[in-house]
View 1: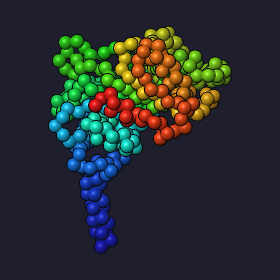
View 2 (view 1 turned 90 degrees about the vertical axis):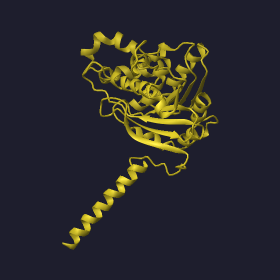
View 3 (view 1 turned 30 degrees about the vertical axis):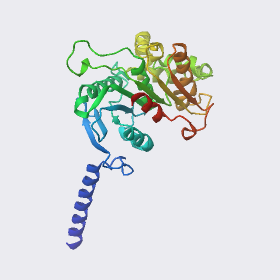
View 4 (view 1 turned 120 degrees about the horizontal axis):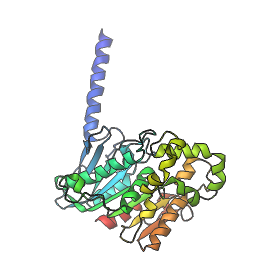
Length: 323
C-alpha cells in the first residue's frame, strides 16, 4: 500500500512537472532556455484553420515596434515532419528575435495518394496559415507587408511556391481569403526546383539512365504526389496537375529575393533522397532568377561543405529583407 501511494504520488509529480514544462514551451523540442524570457513572449499550438494539424507556434519580440514575420515550414516529403523542427535552429530564432522579427512555425495536413488533390492539400494549408497571420497581424503587432517564409526540403519548395506564385488573395473578400499570399523574401534549404516532378529528369544528371530501371516505381510515386493511387489512373491528368504546381515556370521579374542552399554532395540519383535534394534543383532556380534579374544567393556543395561555413547565413538574409 505504501509503495502504491508513493508511485501514485510520483506519477502526479511527473504530470505536474510535464504540464509546467509545457507551459514554458520546453516540451516537444521547444527548448528556449537560451533566450532571455524578458525579450520575447510565446504561444504554442494555436489554430489557424479547422483541421487537427492546422496549428502554429509563435515567438514574439517584446517591444512596441511593428514586427516583421518569418514563417518556418517543416520538411518531411509532405507526408511527415513537425513544426518543432524550427527549435533545432536556435541561432536563427535568437537572431530573428534580436532583430524584431516574429517567428512562426506551422504544421499542415499531409497528402494522401487517392483524393485527386495530393500535395495541393499541404499547399492549401500553408496558404491559409500565411493569410491567417496577415489577417490577425494587429493582434500580434506584425507588419503584414514584411512577411517571409523559409524551410527545409518540402518546406523549402513550399516557400518558393508562394514566393513565385501570383497573389492568391480573393479581391474584395473581407475574410482572411482576401489577404495577400505574396512574400517579401523566401529561404530554401535542400529544396526542389519545381513540383512538376516530371521536369526532374531534365534537372538531375543521369536521371534518364535511372528512369527506365525504376519507371513503374517512380511514375506511381509521382501519381501519389498528385493524389492518385497509380500512374494509370493519373495519366490523363498529368499536364494539368503538374503545370499547376510548376513554380519554376512562375518566376518573373516581380519576385522577391531568394536564398538557396542545397549542400548535398551526392551527384548520381541513386535514391529518393538524392533525387529530391540534388544541388541542381537550387542551381536551376538560381539560373532562372538571374535571367529575370531577381536577387538571389546560391550555396551548393560546389561552394561550401556545410552550412556553418557559409559567410552570409540564411538568417542574415531574412533579417536584411524583413527588418
